Length: 113
Length: 116
Image 1 (cartoon, rainbow over the protein chains, first blue to last red):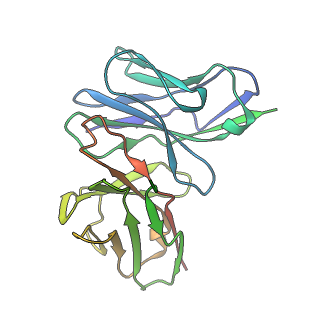
Image 2: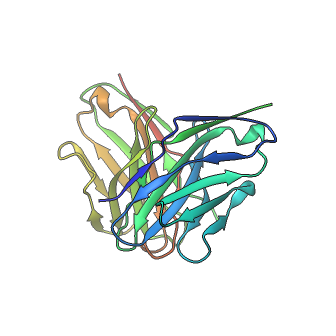
């Protein structure tokens, strides 16, 4: 069975400060990890993914994520937050033999001016 | 290239009625996934389909829910005799190949079902 934990329901950051949204995972095979963002009353937008290769993955809108195998983590980061980054962020995992994505519960990011 | 299309965007049903949710995958995508998002929760996998085949329905409730992806036309998620607990956002995603084969799933805007 695979699972994802996003330990923070909400993260508050001041505009211009760095942000981190945490994610840890559990999967039996090699992990395929994803971050999605959801704006109010909208679908999920893909941000970035880790399949293999460099542990630091760069994605859309200046976001990046660091894969840490020993800590089974895939934290989302951005060096300088924008107010427009305020949204709901979901981490997801699948294994190399599976098809479904397993999502974390989501973390609401609030960036204040 | 249009994205994943879902309709209707909002659906209101009374208890006991049927709800039919439609999903048209992105052009060239033959794999469709349905997820349900309850209020203030993450998405939960329901079913994975290819054209004319159900590949994985491990997340589907045993009763009242069914899904199909015919050779022609959109994928349909059907909920019979809806109850208030079915109220949720239902998202469809599509991918061109198996999700484990380095392809992300592209999500539609969702259908928000409200059961009165």
